Length: 166
Image (cartoon, rainbow, N blue to C red; front, top):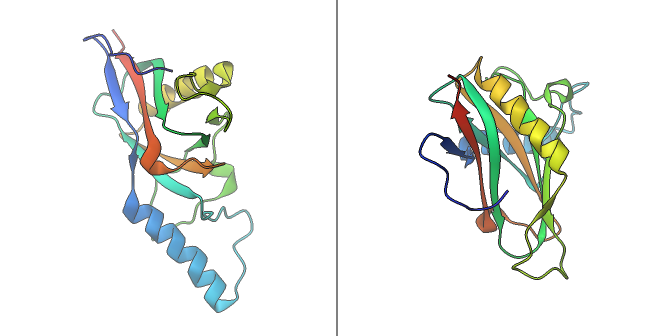
């Protein structure tokens, strides 16, 4: 959960915002609002403080090692994995496709900058292991990042370390 350098036998994958997919999901919300229609039963609409990120797996047989996360300033970032193989032009995000547990990192407004970020370590460990499981069957995995309490994407650096299975 820190910014130390990874050993050479590991692979660190950075979460990258998928701006096109985020925009497509925002268009879905605005389209529903303009037309006065309701979301489909079970559909999960993107909220204004959320964005879609992705991990691309070049190697698929992985074991989770650790998280690297930094957030300048204060705030809360929640990461939710999505089990869907995304074809947003054909399918909408459904609530049942959101994975448990979610990952949450935060720093309170009164915490000093040099204080490490807080997180629920057991959930983060399980979440990392779930990502490694998903990597075995797909080359790309998508995530919803929610920025709350002053957190912003520009102040965030998030990656996850894996070791290749032997």
